Structures are given as structure tokens and as C-alpha cells.
Length: 544
Ligand code: G16
Image (cartoon, rainbow, N blue to C red; front, side):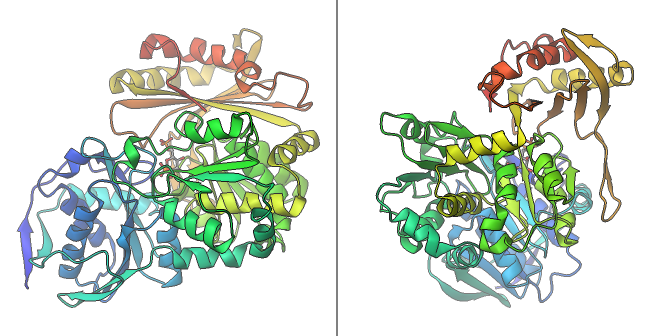
């Protein structure tokens, strides 16, 4: 077995997006495409010699092949040890947990999150640092810069490693350790929550719940935690076996793609509690009986009830949400007199705040919630948090939400996605909107008056780094808001995201349907930005 130096030529499309590099599988299958990006990651680490790296993915198509490539390259680059989940499986939060527990230099996550999997679908790769979190923009930009000048990468001529048997083998001087992907993570959850209380809830036959793993990575985690450790009846976890193409589905936990679960929550005998998570297990959707809980409300509620959960009973240092996320959590933070930070879209922006001890909880409208227990958003953690609250309060989830609205008022929130839009048209739309921002204040749109408009510019309060053009914000004099930005996670065309939110002090005063409560804002967005004219679409593809 020997080290090989492989000559390569560069690709110009390897700039990581909101969360790593996501492309169609066929793009990754081009000669040296994956290898170039992996070598660029390794070059961004001060030294690979003697370091330990965690590697795992969501089990989608191309996961195993990519791991074999990474093993050969990591060995040739001098890593002392690789920790890999059995079968190549590790959920994104589990990677974060394992990096932190074993104090490694970082980890590589192989996933395209909620995007579909299969030979014609999506794949992705991202680097997490020694804090367990997604690399900062400074690091991802350095990785991108390296991909543009790379002339060779290092590999070796070793045979494939058996990924399915727990234990250790050797490639060159590198120890390859195949671990149980679930146990470290499940142990951490047991430290955070009141498992005894939750066990009595889940073994109560009148409390019926369902967790939809969507044929993705959280199946084994949810079966171990919910069914084995917490005693929920077998079958509580549906679609629990990870498959390379997610059972042919779209592993995105929203009302459209998790329709099987939604039907069970809305049927003639609805379950008391339902939840789903995505391809790599970092997103969550939570449902009460016949009742959808918006992720922005969910974050606010978790904060308001955090004192009921063992890990957070001593208090929460602060909270953060991404800029487009609805502002329900701000009200709870104000009531608790703790700081509430606003960051650009992307989990990587929460890392510095957590490392500095400024925040304990954070979340995004895109079905992401998490805490400083790891440095990724964490789908199953959010579900367990909810179950802990339900067990403590002994109330149905929907009652808990309604009581929250009575206490704080309601922040209506909705996101409209226009998918696979012509990229040039989408950019033109945003650009022309930008040119109007400085003169927009005072403009009348229907009954609404623009109070201010800008392009969100973030200055990290910890290291002072700046991120420009993070989304157009249009604020109205009644406090309601429209935000528009282009997604950084799609793999074909552009996805335009339009976010709407409005506060209603008397939650039962206006319609319960957010689309009705936000109807004038939805019309205003089209009038101000020309969405239908630029996209050629009369309505969004997905509404959440
Ligand atoms: C990733 C990021 C999230 C972000 C989401 C959507 O999530 O980690 O922070 O909110 O993408 O980003 P965009 O609006 O740019 O598409 P995931 O679950 O896809 O890894």
C-alpha cells in the first residue's frame, strides 16, 4: 500500500452554499470532483498529521463510495484516526456530538439534507470544525479558494474498508474505527431530558404518538430512543429504515412531503403527537392533534418552557434566530430579560455565539431548532424537548401552543418558495429590488406603508466578521415584514424564498389561517418585487 499523488485540474463551481457543497450526484461523479473538494478541506486544516476526523452521512446514494474515497485520501494525508458510523451512517447532529465527545479536529458530513437522493438526485459534503459546528464563512471561502488552484491531491491504493462491522482496521498508518452511530448521541439525549417522566408518558396507552423518519437517517436513532429507551410501542417510528433514495420520497419534514404523518394526525382518530425529521436528521416538524406547529412558534415555546427540562432548568443565557425567522421568540426573550440575537440564514452563524456562551437555544424558520448541547440543529432533540414539556405540563401540544398565544399574542408567519426559477431572472429580480430600497420608505402598497427597507448586513458580535447581502427586508409601519432572498441550498435553477410575518396581539382576533392573516403582505410582495412577472409563476410551489 503506498501514497499516490494524483494530478488534477480544477472546477469553478465548488463554492459551498448555505450548508456545504450540494450538487447532483452526477456532478460529484465527474473525475476528481469529490477528491478536489476533500483535498481542499484537508488543506484548510492546519495539519492533518496525527489528527482524528469523524466521517458519516445520511445513507443516501453515493454515501458509501464517497466514504471509501475519503478513507484513502485521509490516510494519505496523514490522519491518525478516522471515526466512521457503521454502514457509513451518522446523522448531522450525531457527527457534531461525536466530534465534541472525542475532541477531534472536526468531521465530514455527507448529506444533501432534505433534498431527494438517488443516482439522478442530490449529494452533498460539508466540513465541521473542532467545536462540532459547520465551518465558518472564513473557512468555507478558504476551501473554495483552494479548489480553484489545486494541482494534485493525495490518495492511496488500499482496498475498500468494511463499513458494516464495528471495530478497527488500518489503512497506511491510519486507524479506521467503525462505531455504533447511535449510542453516543442517545446517551447525550438521556443526559439532557427527564427520561423517567417521558417514559411514563409514552407508556400511557392513551397517549399515542408517531415519529416519521421518512426512510432517512433518524430511523435507527428514533427506534433506539423512543421505542427502546423510552418504551413507546413498537411501530411508533414509521419509515424507520434508511434507504439510499429515501423510499423514493422527498425527506423534507413539512406538511407537503410528510403527508402520511399529516393524515394520521388529522384522521378520524388523530394521534396526540406527531413529528418528523429530514434526510440527515437535523430538521424537525412537530404536530399536535390536527394541529401544525410552526417552527417559529416552536422555538418561542421551547424557550418559554425550558425551565421544565433538566438541561435548561438553571436558565438560558440567550437565544438567537435567523433574520427571516418570525419574531415570536423575541417576545419570550424580552419577558425573560435575556438577549435575543439575529443572524443570517445558516446554522454556521450560531456557532460563535454558542462558543462564547452568549446563547443556549437557537432556531430557524426552516424547521431547525437546537441548543449548545451540539453545534448543529437537531431534529430528534427538538422532538424530545417537546415530549418532555408535554410530560411535565400534562397537556396536549395544541393546548400548550394556544396558551402561549394567549400569553404573548401570535406572530403569523409563512414562507413562500418559488423553486427551479430561471437563475438569471431571479438574480435580476433581486437586483432591481435592491436599487429601489433606499427610496422605498413612505411608499404606500394597498393599505400598507413601508417604514424602512434594506439589504441585511451582518456583523458577527464575537469576531467582527461581516456578511453582506443576506436578504432584503421590507418593514411596514404596522410592524409587519416581508423578507426576500435566494436559497443557498438548491441544486437546479434558483429558489426564491419570500417570508412574511405579522404580529397580532389578540391571537383570536384575526383568521387562524396564516395565509389569510398575511394576505395583504403577499399581494404587496408581488407589487414591490414583480415576482410573477420575473418568475412567470402565479403562485409559489411550496408554502410553509
Ligand atoms: C440549511 C442550513 C440552514 C438553512 C437552510 C435553508 O439547512 O443549515 O441554516 O436555514 O439550509 O437555507 P436556504 O434558505 O439557503 O436554502 P439544511 O437542513 O438544508 O442543512
